[in-house]
Figure 1 (cartoon, one colour):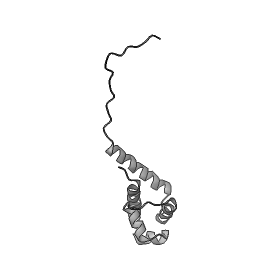
Figure 2 (tube, helix red, strand yellow):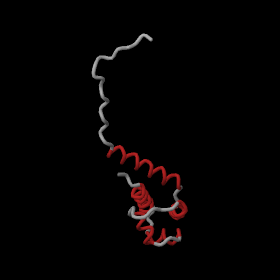
Figure 3 (cartoon, helix red, strand yellow):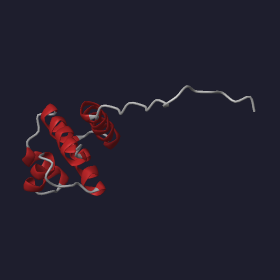
Figure 4 (cartoon, helix red, strand yellow):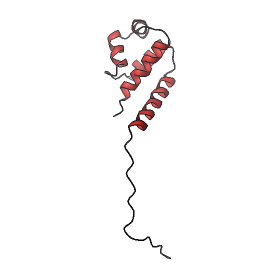
Length: 100
């Protein structure tokens, strides 16, 4: 099962690390507790839209970029975990076309 919150956390952590920021720095700038941001990054908590916006501002990254990255990650996980498609059943006898 694809967990949006886990993939969101992965993207937020990657953005933070790419910018060389600590959890403490993001926490201070976003005015969100360090522990809560840590839980979001680990996929243990859901981020509200307001909180996500604050985190993106603290990271100086557009919300649209974060959401696009998460969407891409969801698509990759779905493709990797997709069940084998069921075969299409074939008709028991010959197919006869009607002239009607």
